Image 1 (cartoon, one colour):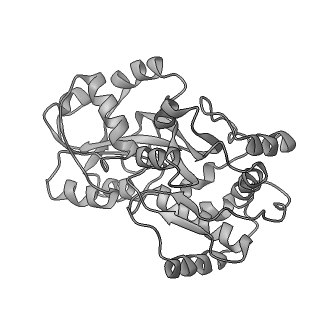
Image 2 (image 1 turned 30 degrees about the vertical axis):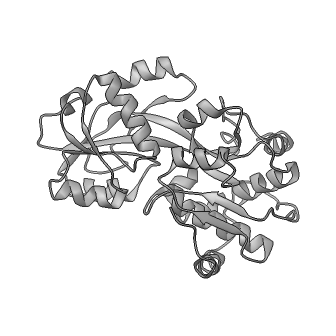
Length: 312
């Protein structure tokens, strides 16, 4: 886990500033920026992950508004590590998944729901596996140790009654490990579409595993944390559609965050959603009509005021 250097942050801010503005989903402009806390740290994710890339873009938006480098990006394994850092006071803002956050609902609040992360389980197209139970004893690329992928993978495998050798790979390294035969399958909890899955799918050698058998009992047991979805055939051609499990991803903050700051940050997120989506397509889901749906995690009062005043 490393923070972004000040020089790299300056380069990032300049690059993001070069993007065209005006693609946001909400009319009007955010109020003048309040004074930022110092330090102001944002926990993101590992190399190649949507958390990291959207985090970089969001930091650029905020730094540009403040007129100087303010946001310190912290690179992590993803959601569970982000949650630990947020509740421990090591960061002021973090991307977190609802299933991970649910156990800390009194210690974290949300600015918004940003997108839904979907569990992709990729297996060889010519293989026999049709269900997670068929991966019993397999070697799996299952994200980093403190990632949302690893967290949900354990829940799914427990539900399936399967034991597997879970290996720690970034998304990019998972592609390499699968192609070289180091792992039998790849699990990745991420927004859609995600480049690593697109790359694997391109030559037709992989397919998505149907998660229906494990998904339905998990949704019943955790109805506020998971939702059933279908990955459409148009998402990763030539792969066919497959039932999958999704978990909402939130932009989480500490309950003690200043209300004016939380209100302004929420406004900035939505007003620059179009700009963020040009960096990663998953950010196209940032929408005020769904952004307030953060249950079981409460909205920060400043964020709640923003949604109430807009009434999308």
